Image (cartoon, rainbow, N blue to C red; front, side, top):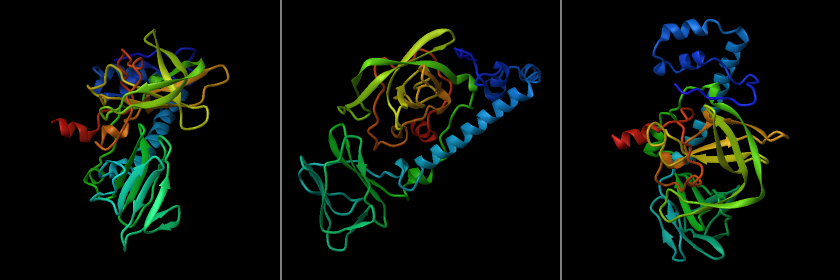
Length: 315
């Protein structure tokens, strides 16, 4: 069993290794001994552990709901790389094209889309879409993501009746363990760095702004991960792999959002909230790979595991 060192004190985050083992029942070798050890926990320790698991459960349920939404990533039916030649695709209305001025759709009579409450018919120019940006026009049959990834304009239709979405069983994960909520330190770079990373799509590259790195320890071993800007102001986004990658967790990457650091740079790196990117589920994703230095030599037995769908595909 992996013991994680939470540096700088626990502040209600840590708890007994015995209790951690009990919650991971499939990894416990001596259940009776573990129960005896856990019986000595204080009411406050037990309540903190229960609250931690409940908070994680609520968060993970929301995460799964977003993934499996009618217009979520599991609903994608194709990825289409747009060119200057107008092209019709079998799972989207209209003919689609892209040039330096942006993306255009030409809808045939009887076809229409709606974007932000506005009805679209005939020829419509969406303009230039920023990198990692997207627009989502829709009709009664689905949603049609218009986006730019790695400098390429793409169209990704999303239909709620896809077999992948219909068969979704949830995202498997390790049992939540407070020992994997690690206190660390954010070290900002003197200047933000543009970091180029690869993609699950061969030949595609992504560029992210990295404002700094997050430092922490596991079993006394100092580690660091380059962090990108997160989805909310001041927050951080980390892409990483570890010794479980390709064994019990998705091989290419996992993603972790880190709340904004405290004034002194303190952060909580909660690996329980490490998630699979969409590419773990669908071939129609363009997910980035981690920076070269974000390959941890330790086994992070926390967060989401290999999706059921991927396990079936490998069988």
